[in-house]
Image (cartoon, rainbow, N blue to C red; front, side, top):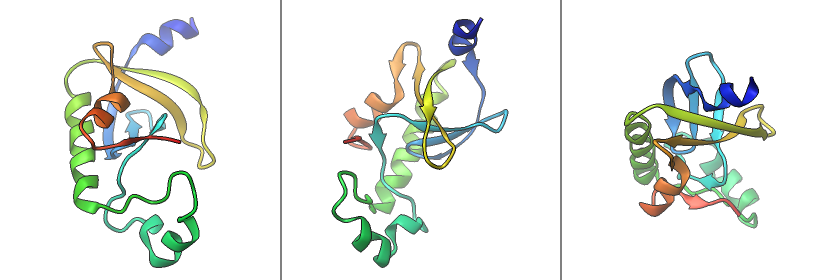
Length: 121
């Protein structure tokens, strides 16, 4: 039965940004293996956070205009057909880590191919 649940189409309530969505049941999904630019107002882009996080493998990507493009591209991509969610755990914020695909095409790879996300290192 769990395999059938994983393969079932997911209802996307909204796309928060280029790597986070909320399902209609309230579950928060973090798109696994990518990092998308932050949106305006992100605490990760404060001067203090940018300095503190600068040495990480994935420092804050604070291109707000590109963040909006990434969010909009993910929303458009997910609207093209049934969304399949493959869950792979949770992150430190309690979001489900998962790959999202539409018609067999991976959403994260799609955003990376457009330059609207980068591979998580």
